[in-house]
Amino acid sequence: MRVRCPNCGRLYSSIIPPTCCGESLMIEYDYEEVDVSKWKNRRPGVWRYKELLPDVSTRISLSEGGTPVLRAKLGEELGIKVFIKDETRNPTGSFRDRLATVAVSYGLPHADNGFVVASNGNAAASLAAYAARAGRPAYTVVPKLIEPGKLNQITAFGARLIRYGESVDEGISYAEGLAEGKGLYNITPESNLIGLEGQKTIAFELWEELKPTHVVVPTGSGSNLYSIYKGFAELIAVGALEEMPKLIAVQTEKCSPIASEVLGVEPRAEPTKALGLYVKNPVMKELALEAINESNGTAVLVGEDELDLGQRLLAKEGIFAEYASSVIVPALLKLAEEGYFERDDRVALIVTSSGLKGHYSESREKFSIGGTKLEILKLLSENEMYGYEIWEALEKPLKYQAVYQHLRELESMGLIEESHRKGRRVYYRVTDRGRKFLETLGG
Ligand SMILES: [Zn+2]
Image (cartoon, rainbow, N blue to C red; front, side):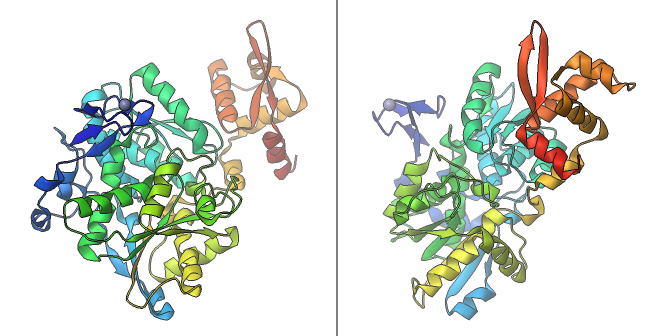
């Protein structure tokens, strides 16, 4: 592995530090030396492609990658050959396990204090599992809007959960601060490209099994799209492939920073039900656009009302996908209708993550609030109060510290906020969200 600054061209022996000239370092290999015929004798999985992966002294693996490619019945109805790359079969149910195995293995010697990631959920669940496997602490910075299954995974694996910001955008610099302050190895793809080396193996597997002409990719941060592009570009560099398949980025109409650029429409950056795609200002936008342009691909926008349809049609194939993955089906239908495909095309749809991760709903958070939190919320809706005052007003056999814990949790849920301080007293008040929350409960 070779590490090069894309700006000044300086070569590094490792990806630590991850940036030079303010840009992410690019990872390269001695492509003339790579013999891809060795791959087929090895067991399936990410590490099968070790010549095009970083050298690591210890592999932290849960047997990720090597996921199936299934022929889609949907294609027969459309008169084209459609295949589904089912990434839900990875250890934690998403393609991010490919990132985690490489980033955690590579970062291990630099992670005595642990790892950190900013993520809208899947990468956090993956890091939680792989750090547990490695016996190191994991800090996960996730936004307020997140599916419950992802939270369950993170806590079940014993990772620290920090809920910060409404979308993942705000969490990226927060995680960078944590990494610096606590001496953690940061595997956030926006801050460190090492994990993309794992993600690019989706391209190697597609090439081995399918040789697709088109790859349809749900796109939030753009890191998956760019990884797949890099994988195919490396297959060309080693002489295994002649032409790059066309890469098709799919976003939702509500959050479209990358697709809008390709389609020449006004971008939007609002919350979408496809939460995995809710990235307002993707750091990797330029790299994602490069992947689309260089591959001669395109982008498609999908409406909120099409997500359920996408999920249902994938279910008919026997696959349960999260909304962020389900966008690929309405995108395929749109392109097919426009006559975008030709008869002999082989179209690969990437199902990035499992529907078992669940849907976010405010009403579910309602049930996750215990009685004491609700009482605190009601007290604060009447008066701004400080901790000791709340403790007294509760009239419960409760430790004083427990009240502080409840306050911190209510704050991280966005239901209360600090209003002001008087000396050492911190006063809290209910937020608009907290008020709405109480209203839905009927007062
Ligand atoms: Zn440089």
